[in-house]
Image (cartoon, rainbow, N blue to C red; front, side, top):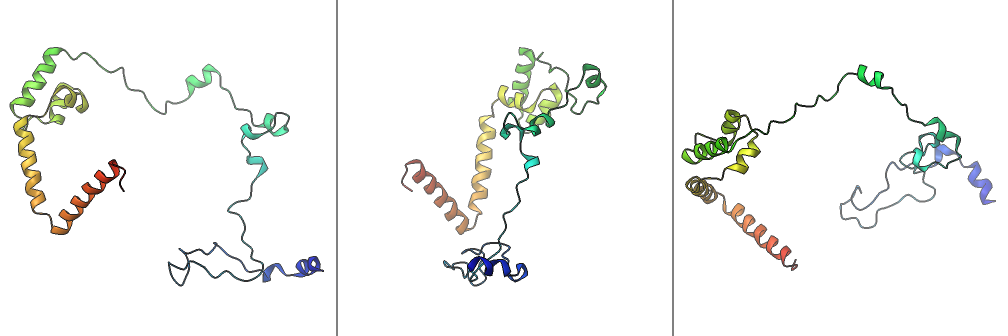
Length: 180
């Protein structure tokens, strides 16, 4: 008897929910711990219906007829040679940097770090900026001036930002000691 009543129930009369109500998407409040669900039968379909033809080959049984249809196309060497290059590879990198060039980079960087920046040295000697950073170290005078500039900027921060930074440092220390 119940089965007949379900069959005769019109599909248009079944309420539809586009998403399941929860405590975060409720209309009343974000802290609604018990959302009001509609009474009775609710049509809430899955996100997508599984399709047997889209099943990956790895999940198919060995005797499945779909596994032969999903074979990969192979190309001959001539076909590959005729295809356009999508990602052109650069020429072999030049590792011909001599110790004299490295010492010149270091001397220029130490003499005037304001003028001879990492990028400027990399362009002049045609090396990467990472190479310049590895071969040279920052000048101590320059390091101290940068630290003073940073401290001057920190002194101009609002009190709330200073407190936030102190709290962040304290939280990191607590995390490192597993005391959070």
